[in-house]
Image (tube, rainbow, N blue to C red):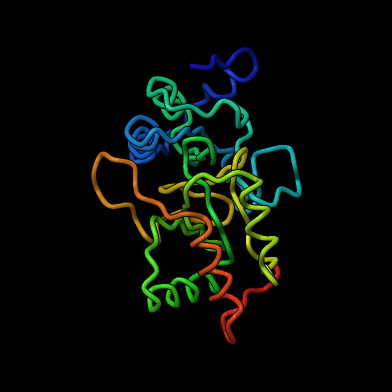
Length: 222
């Protein structure tokens, strides 16, 4: 368990009386049952929800990223998770992607909904899908940057709207709220103690790129 010292300890010790008990339950499930390393997100500014509590006035993912502590503090230790969300009960849950945890492929919400419908019609099996008002993310098995590079190099065209959350990346998980709004499951994991099944990144990228490049389904370069 990584110790949080000095200034960071004081920051994390501020309580919020509007806590959401389901957040700590979900964080404990991810960390202790599924062995997905998590940590609290920066959280949106309570006075202006579209802004972040981090010092970056131009933050592009308000509330949905690690700030204090940093990403390297992500843990599967239940004691640390309880302490974090007992002291920051409204903080978003952030997954440190890669390693033994899932990675993700994300795209803007509207084309994502159309792409998932196309994949359903094609019989493509998907695992959990995380949704926010602006983007949806399909969880995939961990991959290396070398694997991703080879996969993308083999494509004639990869939509610029796709984002890849791999080793050293992060993703906000449900339930919770960031500066763009609610984070929820569009495709929820099946109930049970085992970590959810997720597909290979190759299968997802192939299917999503194919769906996005069809007429009427292409995504804007966001």
